[in-house]
Length: 150
Image 1: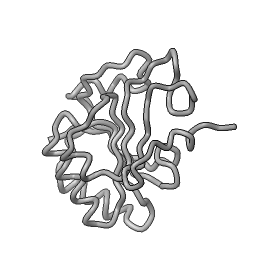
Image 2: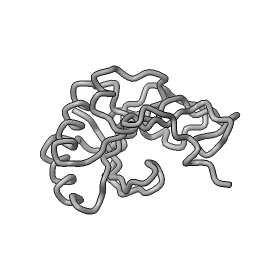
Image 3: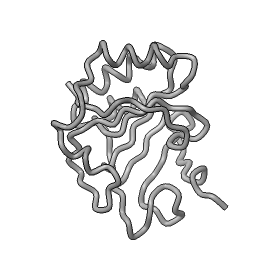
Image 4: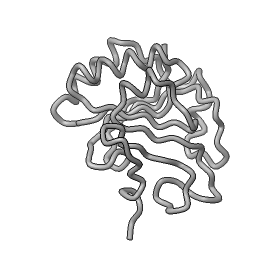
């Protein structure tokens, strides 16, 4: 089971999508400069069980187009289960991870994927020098350019 912060609607994390974000606690990457260090503590937040998750998806169905997870890949079976539920309900799916690689079983359930530790020396997705990559998996391409403002 996951612990998570309350779900929130976000509009900038996945280009062209209004997303329902689940911030999953227990991150073991520990990026220096992380803006969400509270997510490192697996005891933080509230349990995200299937009933609570489904209630969120039903509540926001027709308003959001994408279900976004910040983390959770360290419990692949649980994450995959939640991604499958979202896909069956017609949502797109996305994962933000500080890791460079994600299991193929998880990738198979994703439309979008952000990889790479945050490095404050090169910046995040809005920096042309970032080490992070944002993938549109349906088109099999990196779309970092959508985050960079002119």
